[in-house]
Structure formats: structure tokens, C-alpha cells
Length: 213
Length: 104
Image 1 (cartoon, chains in turn red, brown):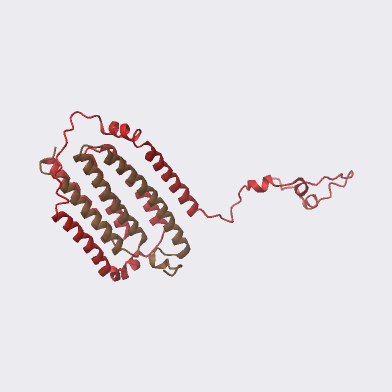
Image 2 (tube, rainbow over the protein chains, first blue to last red):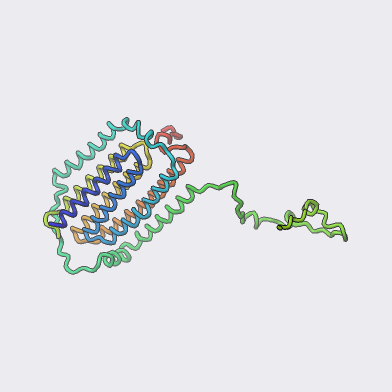
């Protein structure tokens, strides 16, 4: 009985958080709703015996993605209230889309697509969740695992390339320019006479630096 | 472990969450940030589906695919937020209506 109640609790939390995201006028509140949703989803995952995935959800979503959202919200200074004002215009279309989707789901439920007669398979003595995941992920799914890494690398490079902009006021080392320098353009060889100096422009305008007191 | 809970409850929860995510995408059409958050809801609903099925079928593969969904969601969000930042820098707003350079 208790696990059922806990499931109901987590499910309520998830839906309340989702409602907050949709209805929030201020995106900061929406952010809060997202945190509520994902904490409850992590609890649900742990309830379903997927401890590793639940903890991963907390780490990735609450630790990384939420902070990323907050950073972007911080850098973007907007009057969000003005943004929300005219959004009533999308209400009919939105209701239509959501209504069609909900009708589809209700139909599917009526035709018994949701009432699967899935009985619990006898699980018996099983190793820990993380051991099971490791056993499958690094054998059967090793190639998709590598591809997932590739996707993350692409995302990282893409995000940097997209947001990086060269700034004019910063002195930076230009390696190509350094390597392509020739001897002629960067060096003059003179034979100064005794007592006349080198006679180059640098030497003409050179003054001794004022000595610090 | 559960007495009355079946897979259909989990599927119903997932369907509800999916619908709410879609509603968020359509209703918050002006604000890209809200759309990205709603997109996360949709992906989470799929994840819940997979994990619930994985539990009731005693098959670990669902959790593996849920993890892949997590990866893709993180990557998508990183790129999406980068684009939002870029868009804001160029246009000074994050309204989708401002993205009309292609006259679409």
C-alpha cells in the first residue's frame, strides 16, 4: 500500500511542476516548476528500482541543466511580463492541438492500449541496479554508448562555436601570423658607426623609462 | 512490491505529462525559454514510460535507453540555449516572432 501512495505523491509532484512550467508568467517560477518536476521524477525512478538513473537525473537536470537555464536567464535581461501579454492569441490553436492529443490518448485508453495485462516477471535475486546497467551498457549497447559520447562532444563544440565571438579590444597571440613572419619584415641589420647609434626610428624616438621612485 | 499499481498507471502519468508538455510548447509560443522547458517535459515523459516498462518487465534495456534520452536532452538543451543567447544578442529579444529573417 505504501509504495502506491508514494507513487501517487511523486506523480502529483510531477504534474504540479509541469503545470507551473506552463502557467508561469515569470520564467524564474517556471524554472522552479522544472526543479519540482525533476526531483519528483527522480524519486519515481528510484521507486521503480532505477536508482542510478534517478540520481543521474538529479545530477544532470538539477546540477547542470537548471544552472544553465539560470545562467541564460541571468544574461538575458527581458521584460517577460510584456512578452506574455499577447500570448492569448495562441490560445485557440493551442487548445485545438492539446485537445486532439488528449482525445487521442483517451481513445487509446478506451481501446485498452493502456490497460496492458503486464504481470510482474519473477525477478528473483538480482544484482544491484548499477551492476545490471553496466553489464548491459558495456556489452550490448557499447556502440550507442560511444555515439552518445560523440553527441555530447558535438553539442559542446557547437555551443562554444555558436556563442564565441572575437573581441577587438583583447590582445591575443596569432600563431599563424607569428609563424609566417619573414626575416626581411621583422629584422634590419645595420652597421652603426661609432657614436651614432643604429639610426633606426625606434632608436630615434626611444627615451629612457622614468625610473620608479 | 506494488499492490494496485500497474503499468497502465505509469502510462497514464506519462501521457498526461506528454500532453502538458505539448500544451506548454503551443501556449508559450512567444518565449523560447518556456518552449525549451516544455520540451524537457516531453522528453521526461518518454523517460518515465521507459523506466516504468523496464520495471514491470524486469528488463534493464529501458533504463539504458532512458539514459540515452537524457544524453540527447542535455545536448539539445546546450545547443538550444546557445542559440537563444545568440538570438538575443542579435535581435535583443527572445520572442519567436522576431525570427522572421526568412519571411516564413
